[in-house]
Length: 164
Image (cartoon, rainbow, N blue to C red; front, side, top):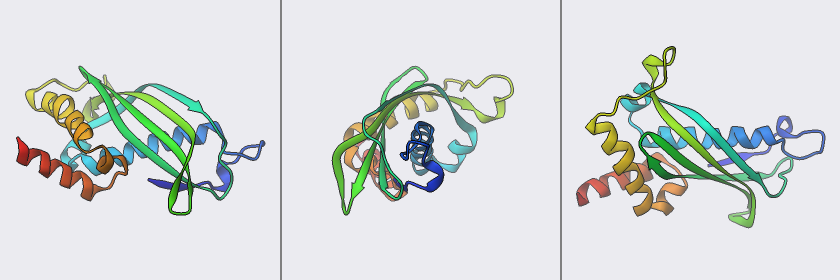
């Protein structure tokens, strides 16, 4: 996912404010989920952040193009680890310098129960989807899934299901 640094993203030190990096982490995670999950899953499952960790390496400046890359790490029970890299785009290439990296812990919850408690019932289908299918897709097709687009996720899911 590519974003541009906008005037509203700049703080008094003339570089991107730290809160903007957090917004980008959440935006790329949301885009990734929406490109992968069915409409039914999207309406039934919402995500709650347990923890964000962001390591800031270099500043980004006004007008720069930024590449956001994300992938899922470990999934234990119903807690999911997601990693994000934020890099500056130079022409058609990605810089070798990392601007920031993040690790986020997410918990899936049923959208209909947000007012009570965000928990997802463990069924064989949800266990398969979150603990087997998603981690397998990310291990088998990291390059395709790294730059998220719906077509790539459909291809990867179809390829994986044809191997099962």
